[in-house]
Length: 545
Image (cartoon, rainbow, N blue to C red):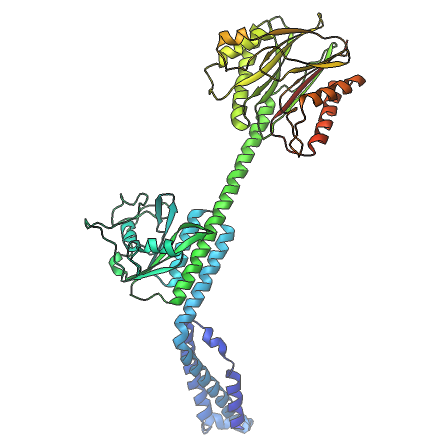
């Protein structure tokens, strides 16, 4: 019976593989507890039952001595087995502790990758993880940017910047410095009993590092950019240093360094985990850069949306209402904002005018100049009598005041209701499309762009044209984005096709808004969804009677 119980106890403890995975402190605790268990089980197993207390219990429960003896045997065997297992597994405690640290550190680092997009936090955590998983005394990161190198020392046990550079300058077996060797081999490199590379004049040869030459030997700047603190490690305490490249495809983002106090203390597992951590850091840096770039792009997009809204507010919110004519206008930038512009102005005699303009270029710069031109037009229109006078004064205001690379084209028309006439002046802008008595044509009065020529030359080449404008006549002012719209094959919509569309559509006497819809329907069918290359602006007017 006792033999069977003993075998059963050994069977129960035979699968105690969990002991191997305990950490060193837990194994020592298990040894202590199993020792106490052995003592208690021995007492039960060896007790002869002659005490008055046991004899009294035996008189009441005759089987109790046998039961206690059996329980003592089982507990004794179990505790002996646990003690032996823990004792055998004790030499593996360091490896288990190390593996646990590696798993915990890498798991923490992995969670940080998904939660934090701040490069400073990532670098700080990376340095701490590198120290933990390799059991190193110090760790740091060297980031490369063109010809400059930046040291990030973190809050882990660290060196001064100069000591770190000295260790990085230690020679490897191939005669290169550690930094050069890591870059050349694109893999982990180790230097034992590290000594710096010394030049002919006795100075340490180091690559160019940002801000390190001004640092005192007793202080370093942390990766967080916080207050300077005293270093916790000196270079003379360290004998072995290893470096692993931070690779992003073919590019080398930098190098991760770790250092230990004893020579030849980096084993194969250390170097493997160091390479893994370096890969994780490189991936984290790319991820952080991508997120930061995405955030910046989103912020720029939001700012551009605000700029687009502000630019649209610069355009007239409504067209003037008259018993003599109907007007419809709209502008659509190719990007968020653009350089096209239209407006309604009032001349010195109270007559209304239409202005359409196109600033060279696209995007924010063109939009900025467009806003400036609007201010000039509004300031000058009330003091001029004709479109020609207005364009001449605008050119005087702009010439020499804006970047020579920039210029603007503009058409200005004055509506003379009683005379049934349009006065038109064109400063290098697209020709004016007019349909009279069902016949369409382009009018190309002379003129050169604004801010290109000196005032005298500009006025000499500027023509004022008067056009009869009777009932059911149409005029279309446009920017070059419409005729230059392209099909997927690269063919332009063209001025002649636009003229044919407008001439045919006006036979039905549509309103300006309806004529606009017809034009853009044909344009959309032609481009088949191809995105526009240029801003598109159109102002349409019909004479009612």
